[in-house]
Image 1 (cartoon, rainbow, N blue to C red):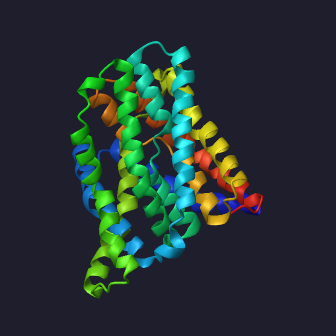
Image 2 (image 1 turned 30 degrees about the vertical axis):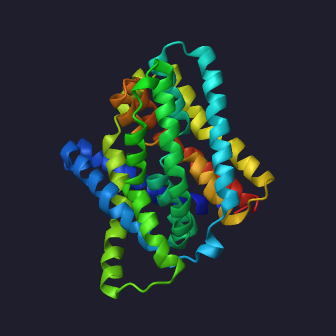
Length: 314
């Protein structure tokens, strides 16, 4: 019982920010314009600041775990292939297939994941999470393009040069690359800069979580298809269950195991809706998957963390 209460207390604040965003939007205190502007601010300024200043604090030689990165790549790529082949048996419409696959593996690790990690393990764990994110972003983008283009026979329309440019210029990746020399060589940063960076970092996750809540439309649950619920089940239950079990079998424990569970258990990223809409896939299905996984993750992440703590694994 004590572990249940403890887990609920550390996870609840993260999702209460999402609830707050939903309520503020419903009573018109915040608008779609506000959400759009703040989302761009978080992605381009505040979240990169959070990543930069957390990586600067860490000791790379003790924090970077190449084995963990290889495990993440191995598990996500194998999961991606399995989901594709199984889904192809049941889903005949190509626009639905690509969206289904994308929604099943694309985690909102940078926002929901970081918020949960900070709450469970403390802000010092965000440096390690930031390094994982740096390796995760390119893989996610490549798999996303494959999932959303190949099923609808648009391989020839893929602009690999633009895709590479988007990956390299991604503000989150840029912040990681910029921080690495400061972390490795222990370069000093003026206190005025660190204080300013601290202010920027502190508003990144709350503002992002409020934006997620504001984008939710509960009424859409009534129209959600079986595909949306199936993809959400894969994302919230199957992927984290098998991923965490395999991570345990491969010897990951404590913080490392907790980070892997949170990575796999996060709800589907909002960007999956944006990409589906832009690339001609089923954007309505994508939106429903984001909605269901965001609401469902309140339960699944809480239960997962409780079990890991109950068995003394984190």
